[in-house]
Image 1 (cartoon, rainbow, N blue to C red):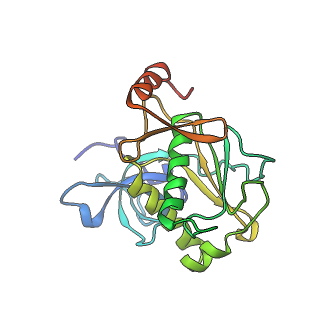
Image 2 (cartoon, rainbow, N blue to C red):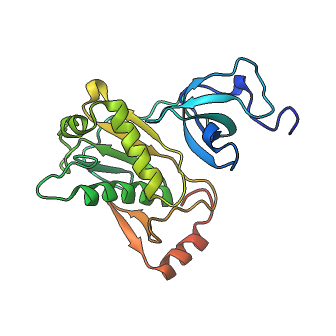
Length: 228
C-alpha cells in the first residue's frame, strides 16, 4: 500500500496518545475513528496497514493507526481550581445529572457548548464536580449513574463525539480520589472551527457566547490563525 514512513511506527506511539484509526469493523469502508490508545498490540515497529491498537473507549475498539492526532499524553494539566470562572475556566456541578430541577440533556449540552466555545477561542479548562462559586461538589452523582470513572469518561467522550460536528483533541483528567475532573481544551490549529447543530460558540469573559452567522464569519476571517 505505502512505503515506510507514511504511517506512524510503533515506536512513535504511546498509551494515552490521541490517534485516528480504521477500526477492524470498518476495514471495508475505511471509516476513521478518533480515540485514545489503551493498548498497542502490534509487535513489529512498522506495518503497511497501520499499527494495531485498542482504544480506551467503552467498546475497547480495535483497529489500525492511520494518524497521530496529539502527542501531549505526557504533558500534565493543571488540576488546581481557580478562585472564579474566567476566560479560561468554567465550572459545572455534573456532566448530566439534573441539579436544581435542570434537565439531563440540557446539562450535557451545556458541557458540549463550553468545550466548543473554548476551542473556538484560546482554549481553556472545564471543571466538572465544581460549583459556580468554586467549591467542590464532587462526582458522586455522575459516578453513581455511570458506575465508575472509566465509564464516566467514556460517556463524556462519546457524547462530545456525537454532539460536536468534528472530533476534537482534548485531555480529560480526574483529580485525586475522583473528587472532580478537568477537560483541558488546547488552542486550536489554524482554521479548525467547531459547530454544534450549526451553531457557533466562542468563549467571552466567563461564558460561552453564541454568534450569528454574520458575526461568526467575521470572527473566523479575523482570527483564522492559531487562536486569537
